[in-house]
Amino acid sequence: MKIDVSDGSIAFAGGTIRSATQRTDFLRSAIGKSAREQTSNELENWQQVAFDPEPGVAATLIFQGEKLHQVYLALRTTLDDAGPWTTATERERNAKHDAWLRTSLGAPPYEYSWGSVSLEFDPKDPASEIIVSYAI
Image 1 (tube, rainbow, N blue to C red):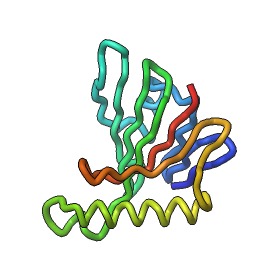
Image 2: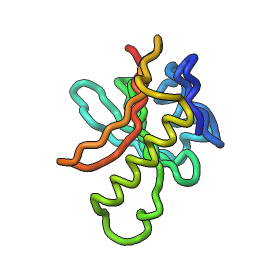
Image 3: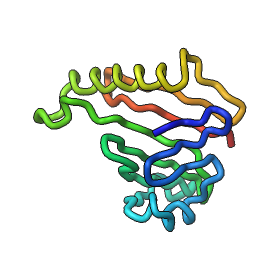
Image 4: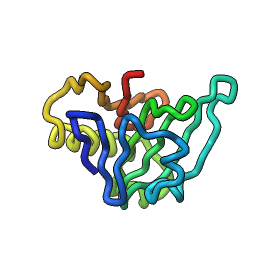
């Protein structure tokens, strides 16, 4: 997995997600054909599409209509297979995400003309995720 800071595209082993990626096109693509589609907010036409783009990575794409808005990425940790979910698992994932971002993109902030990349960890609802947000 690699994020291109020049345009916000995310390259995976099986294909690339770009800010201009349309929901229907993604679902027909090689990387998207096994994705699981979920309606988030039918009234405002928000859609979630979850998939595993490559080993050790889970991704969720958020579309408003056909337009890509955000990508949520989660890296697997050594604790994922150790049993039930724990805060320790998410702390390990958060550390792994932070190390990956610093190695891949340098030091934060990760603000670009096309959008931003952030790391989210909420101890009240612990889930560590890398979030790629595109300017709409």
